[in-house]
Length: 124
Image 1 (tube, one colour):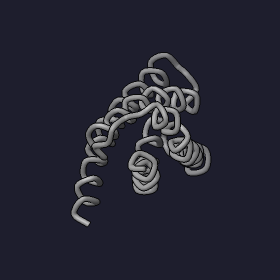
Image 2 (cartoon, rainbow, N blue to C red; image 1 turned 180 degrees about the vertical axis):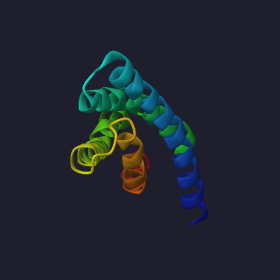
Image 3 (cartoon, one colour; image 1 turned 90 degrees about the vertical axis):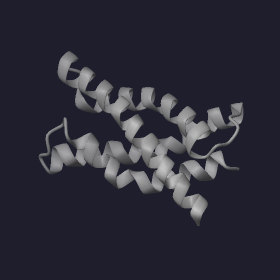
């Protein structure tokens, strides 16, 4: 149980770093360039996916990277992207939440399921 707690703590740290990268890219695309919020969300997500893979391999789960993991990691993150995209859409369109805030709110809902899915893939 101690290892799980340490991994989850490191996952949160990586998540904060990764969210910062994602949100910076998202705001740049959406607010400064005027890219539609869902398009900006997906582009920023894809860029942060690369950063997330390496941080999770080397820091969070401390496993050896492999081509297999590189190729499978985006598939596991498909859940995260789909779920977070749905949440961003619902927050903006259904609940009237500002499109600059909605992506941050979605992180709080997706973090735990993403941790388990990512750990399951990277540790096998």
